[in-house]
Amino acid sequence: MAEVRLEHVTKRWGAFVGVADFDLTIADREFLVLLGPSGCGKTTTMRMIAGLEDATSGSIYIGDRRVNDLDPKDRDVAMVFQSYGLYPNMNVYENIRFPLKVRKVPASEHDERVRRASAMVELDAFLHRKPAELSGGQRQRVALARAIVREPTVFLMDEPLSNLDAKLRVSTRAQIKNLQHELKVTTIYVTHDQIEAMTLADRVVVMNKGVIQQVGTPTEIYDDPANTFVAGFIGSPAMNLMEGKVERGVFVGQNVRVPGVSTKEGPATLGFRAEDASLVMEGAGERPGEIVAPIYTLELLGDATMITVRAGGALVSVKAHKDYRAEIGDMVGIRLAPELCHLFDAESGARLT
Ligand code: ATP
Image 1: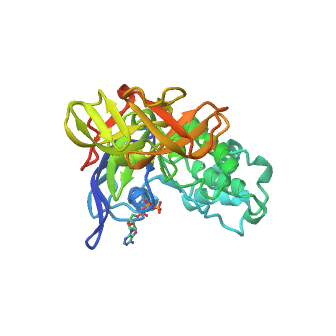
Image 2: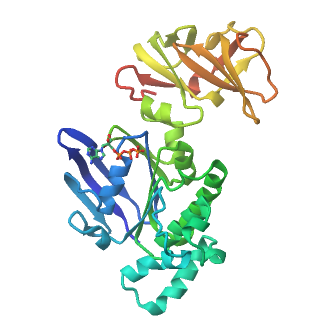
Image 3: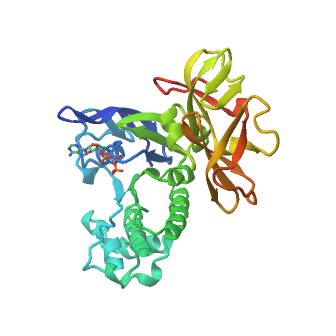
């Protein structure tokens, strides 16, 4: 059990900054997810914690120990990668036992620990198979069992679900969440998939271009994104963002006027979630706070119909009733609730309200 602390950790390669001033304490037993687009520095952060990459500056602590100068094998962390990294010539049992041999754990403990770890990921029936005789999901579970068997103080997982098909991803995700709850091991998990982040994390770190954009619970980053980057990255669909300006408390954008949003005057970006707006069936455009525009596209989601229009210089989506039907090009009205809208600084993107 251990807290993991990164103090002003920076990674540079020449003039290029891969990770800039990463400063965060991950609580003992916390499930922390690093989330961001390709190249934002998630894997580099993880590799610095694991000891596979040196930090250019800053300190990394696992528990009370500063680990910057410790070899990966002495940090007591177990990593699970996207490519499972199994030994093809060993069967499942031997693959799971391998870390115990390397660590010179007494042989008398091996069998019990391997069986306990394999039972946790439901691999009991496959112990004699070779990796080539397993499905992708089963291989990933061997990789998980091999991390579990070590009983490490920290789990580091780098996109462990990316090679699985959609259905298996959902079930393995649930299994990882449940395992972490059972084992109570501090876990740092890297993904570019915001659904994975939202469903697994106690807290999410959203990164972009090496810089932390926001740290918060999934609810915090969904409801109160710190800036337009987070707003545009989190949620499916992401938050609607429209350019415009505030004039005497009214947000004015291309074919949209929303009163009562802010007292700050000048250029701004208005944001709202698809589920926080409603379609106006009759008399569209008669009241302020409504967008009137032709339908750009219409998607049936099963539990709702997603209507997208062009407004404020952007595509704007709202959720309508699942039985709502219309044609592309039909005029619709969308009503925004000013109290559910966010306003962002037009230049920095930082949230104003
Ligand atoms: P992905 O989701 O694609 O794996 P990531 O967020 O994990 O992306 P990193 O692998 O951490 O991103 O890379 C961060 C940045 O650092 C990228 O722009 C990458 O090109 C750069 N980078 C990574 N390793 C090196 C290296 N050895 N030398 C120079 N630049 C590097």
